[in-house]
Length: 434
Image 1 (spheres, rainbow, N blue to C red):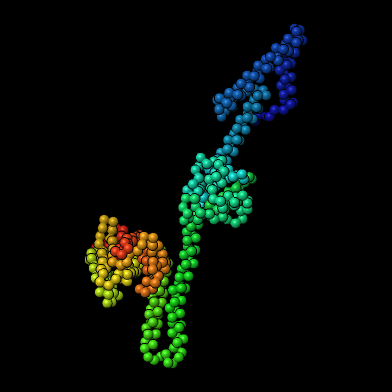
Image 2 (image 1 turned 90 degrees about the vertical axis):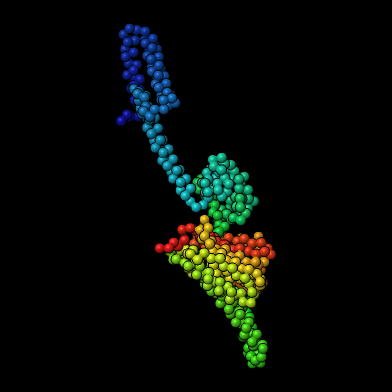
């Protein structure tokens, strides 16, 4: 181990160097000339070592220090040790930064680091997707220039970040982003951005669900309460008035019972997100029963029913859920098809898989309503839906039941012409004969 330099060591080194030259000058005379020559040799030696050190640091970039003697040996070795220490620290720092960035990239939220003056230091890939940042092109850019929401600019200027901020996505006005800003290091802040659109949508659906259920149940209960209060008068229990009251109460009770049954069906389907699609379902036999039920439901409307069914096409799945989906589509077609019009049901095999199509000749649906038809309690014409006994839950049941079978509902409609509701099951759900 080489000792570090000290004043004592330097003085002894100079003393041992100059002592022979002083002795020669004392013996031969010319003392100043001998001292001048010794000083020139000392300077040349030092300049030579300076050049060696410069070449080592800037040209060679070698990890091994050059050989040296005297006072230069501890200098070379000391610089070498500092380089090793700095390399270790840089490696540790690079590892720490890499771990931080890998962890930030794994987060389900967008992460942005920016300085107190607003300049961006770093952001993860999700921030580039949600906020439109470009990394590393936007490094050093003021964050308020890239995220130009007036609410965000005011929020940033107040420097009060206890309460998170909700803003509209700069790319999609239907999406809501929640921003949380917190102190990160000295002079820097960490901003976490989360897409809360689905949470907001679920909250709105929950509020609408309870409001709609309350409204749907209140109407028949109000009717029943009114007739029950009228029945307190003995004179109301005789004559044609009672027959009418009895019919209305029975109708409202049936409607209420149907609503509760559909709510239970929807809850049951949603409560079982993972189901085993291993049960063989005889869809042709199911459609045969549904055809008879549709004719009965039609009553005296004299509708024309056409069922084109592949008798050998059976599938794998959950029978209760698939029956709920198919029966709702068939019953809706019967309810919304006028008298003397046709209801056509097709069950056949396509290149994509088994397909069901239910076509009616009803009033049709305007395009702006189609994408919302599978929402709970959504009805295009509420008054007409109540007349037909619709609750607004049928297509929601169809949507969830089909999603469990890796399918989705397809809707095509033309006003004053009719509508077609269809779905295609995957090829793997075809039940092949043993």
